[in-house]
Length: 273
Image 1 (cartoon, helix red, strand yellow):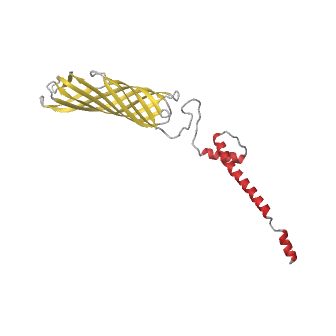
Image 2 (tube, helix red, strand yellow):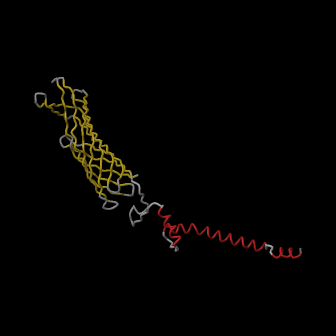
Image 3 (cartoon, one colour):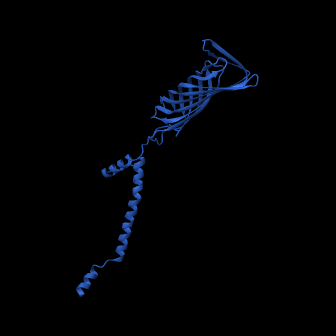
C-alpha cells in the first residue's frame, strides 16, 4: 500500500506546469489564426511572396474561382472588368433634312440593347422627326385611273409633320482605344408619318401614312468612363410611306406615297449597365 501511494504521488500532475502548458498552446493557436488572413490577403493582391508547393497549389485553386481582374495604367478600365455582357442605352437629338420634302426639323432618337463582345451592338431604335410650319402651301400628287397626274395644293395656316421610324439595329464598333470607338451600322423596320394641320379656311385635316424603312449609320463613341460616353452620329433614313383611301371625286381608290429619304445629324449620351 505504501508503494502504490508513493507511485501515485510520483506521477501526480503539477498544476503550475499545466497552466504554463495551456497558456503556451493558446499563444501558438492565436499566432497561427492571426497569420491565416494575412497570408490570404497577400496571395490575393500579390504584395507578399510565400513559398511552398502546398500553399502554391491552394492559392492557385482559390484564385481560379475568383472573377478575372485586369489592371491598366491611366485608363478608366484599370479596375475590375466583368466578364458578362453590358447592356446599353443611347439618347440624343439633332436635325433631319428630308431630301424630297421642304425644310428641316428636329430629330430625336433613343436606342437600347446589348453588347456582343467589345465590337458589336444589337438592339432596337426609336426615332422622331418633327417639323412645324405656318402659312405655307402643301402639295400632293397622284395618278388617277386614266393615267393622269393630279396635283393637289392646300394653303394652310399651320401644319405639323411627324415621322416615327422604329428599327432593329446592329452596330459594328472599332475600339481603337478604350476612349475612342468609331462604328458603322444599319437598321430595318417600319415608319409612320402623320401630317395634320388647319387650312386657310380654318378646316382641320389629318393624313396618316406608313411603310417599310431602313437606316444606315456611322458615328463615334467618346468614353468618359467605363459606363458613360458621348456619341456623335450621321444617319441616312430610307423611307417611302403611303396611304390608301377612297376619293369620291374620281370614284376610285387612291394611293398616296411620300418619299422621306434624308440625312440626320445627331448626338447625345450613351450609358452602359
